Structure formats: C-alpha cells, structure tokens
Amino acid sequence: MEFSERLKKNEDFRTVYRKGRSCANRLFVMYVLENNSGGNRIGISVSKKVGNSVVRHHVTRLVREGYRLQEKRFNSGLDIVVVARSNAASASFREVESALLHLGRLHRILKDPGKAGSD
View (cartoon, helix red, strand yellow):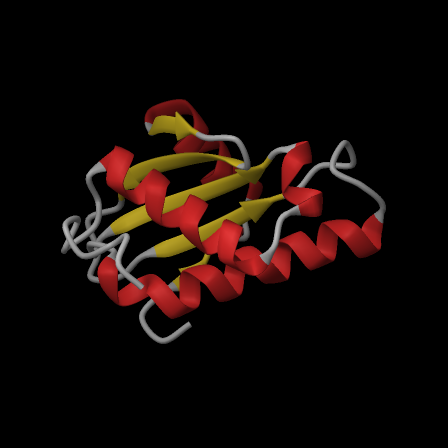
C-alpha cells in the first residue's frame, strides 16, 4: 500500500472500535476514526466464523488488494478497521472492491464520491 500503513496492535483496534463510527453492508463492517496524521492506517479482522485459515487469509488478501487499488480515493488521516462477515468468504474480488467503496461512501470518506461507482 503506497499511502497507508497497517493497524497491528490490539490497543489500536480497540480504540477504533470504541471511539470510531461504524457502517455495515452485506460483506463487511467498517469502523473509521480520525488519527490526526498524514496517512491512513488500515486493519483487517476476519474471525473463525468466516471459515478456516485458508479462507480467512484469502478474504484478508482480497480486502487488502481492493483497498490498495482504491486508496487514492480515500481521504487521509484515518484509522480504518474492516471486519469481514461470513458472506465475504464466497465473494469475488469485484464484490469486495465494490463493498469497500460502498462503505467509503456511507462514511463520506471518499474524495470523489460521484465517480466512485464508475469503474
């Protein structure tokens, strides 16, 4: 990811869960909190309810790649936590990417919300 770092510490995840805003769709729940820095930090959480380790890792890679390709559309200075729901296990890459952009529009954290759906 060119502009973003990863959230890794449990304490950082808990802060975003506790103080951030959440929106959800069929595949994901996204928590967003301003971090007062120049870049974004993204954390991805996929529980055992989604599937075995192979499936969970696959979903994680899809989310990371979907975000990486669209990260220029997201505003800067945010901590973002994406929590996968069980439907994400059978989702295609395009569905994952579309779901991330949908949540970005719901949170109003996209720079160009008018063009976000036109790819």
